[in-house]
Image (cartoon, rainbow, N blue to C red; front, side, top):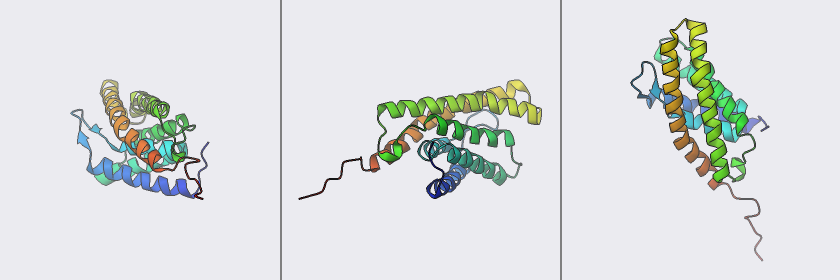
Length: 183
């Protein structure tokens, strides 16, 4: 498990802030009520994969809380919880990746994307709709459509943005043994 230290706390704060800004000001309507094409999940997945499940959980919860709060309609806790859950799952399932050591090849990309697909499908396809029904009495047909649309678009945006962020970050880290002493 990745250690949750000062570096992770800073990354969590930056991740939550980016999640908020992207979710609040770069949201693209999907055509399904109250459901957007959200590019912030690529950043959340990157934070979770590099800094661990706790950073992913907190960045998702804090970032989504401030998105809802800033709109003034109240905080929709079922979706706030789900954003945190998605970050947590991605963080756990990518714990063995060594992105922060400069290693993120094809197998890392596959593992990262399998993790994010599982996180989004379970989170948005099951957890969010069930919480909407239990917490708010929402109609099942409405919330499962919203959840599945959210899962689909979040999987796509995370596959593109999250993968690119992980590849770029990993590429910027010097590989072990790459620095040699000159004679």
